[in-house]
Amino acid sequence: MKQHVAPFGDGTVVLRLMEERDLETILAWRNRDEARVWFKNSGKIAFDAHLAWYRNYLQKEDDFFFLVEANGQPVGQCGIYDIDNGSAEIGRFLVAPEMAGKGYIGRSCAEIIRFSTGFLNLSYLFLEVMEKNARAIRLYERHGFIEERRSGGLIRMGLDRGSVV
Ligand SMILES: CC(C)(COP(=O)(O)OP(=O)(O)OC[C@H]1O[C@@H](n2cnc3c(N)ncnc32)[C@H](O)[C@@H]1OP(=O)(O)O)[C@@H](O)C(=O)NCCC(=O)NCCS
Image (cartoon, rainbow, N blue to C red; front, side, top):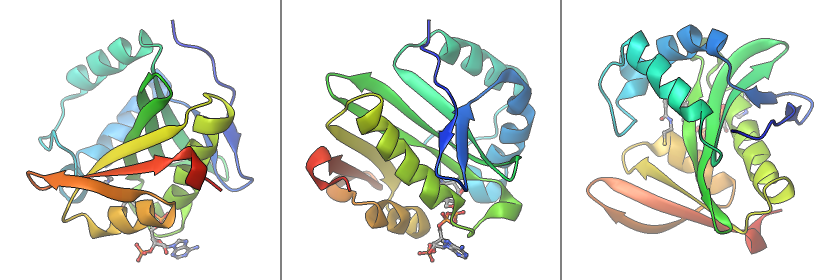
């Protein structure tokens, strides 16, 4: 079973574990044409498939998926997963369309980094991003991620604990 994680944040954003009642909201964000093209599985996802994915996620101990809230409203999502041997992947970053460009996802990225060291005691994080996703790449660079390699249109970026501030 997944370990319970109490909500955490920086005073502006709060990250809390995703709940089944959130799925309709986040699926609507995810299925927008402007958003889904930036995910490896870029097709539209049906609700039943989304629910099945979520229920499978609930069984995983190495995967934490967060809803991001600001002023008590859902503003985005993010996750940390494949937690293994001191490292993990971060991703599933997605903003609610009307909340874009307000800094909420940048703050969430900072909080995930803080969670990864403070709570999970990890020393290394990585992520994958499409090389044309300039907005996301800038966001990750601002938080210290460095390109490690690229292939097939994807960039892998990494962050060593030594460079976490
Ligand atoms: C990538 C994504 C999550 C970023 O969300 P966002 O809301 O734009 O993120 P932020 O607001 O935290 O930061 C992004 C921009 O807002 C700016 N910003 C930060 N705080 C701000 C504020 N208070 N007011 C205005 N702009 C602000 C940042 O400087 C940044 O600008 P830049 O991209 O021109 O450098 C969003 O574009 C998205 O959902 N994209 C589709 C899914 C996706 O690509 N996910 C990543 C897959 S790897």
